[in-house]
Length: 131
Image (cartoon, rainbow, N blue to C red; front, side):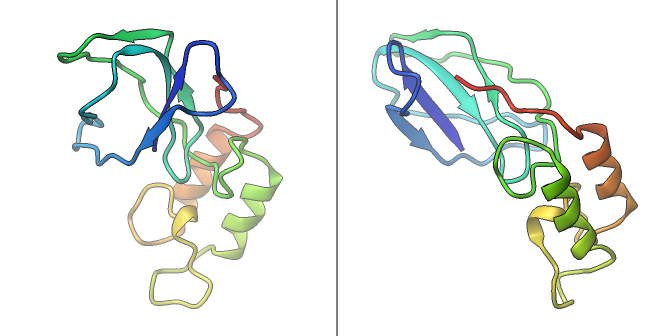
């Protein structure tokens, strides 16, 4: 999800857009009203990244948010013991198994494994950015 916070109001997004990324992590958002915004990006199981204030006056603008940090299974923008517990409950499961939790499949390989656990541990106790 991409949220646009208009300058002067960082508590409520002016608007949001759902996007699909390319294999390189790029995405496009069209028809952005002319204004100045802070932009946030967050996937279902990543920490939020926030841009600097960006002014839009039509045309195309490229903004690099970098790699989004994985591990926020419960979507509270903090990788914590709660996320770790959710991953452990879904450990060693595939979509065919009861208890499979799609948000715990951090690397997207349809199997909750040590690879997903490694991503949680890499970002453990980290907080996502806040606009």
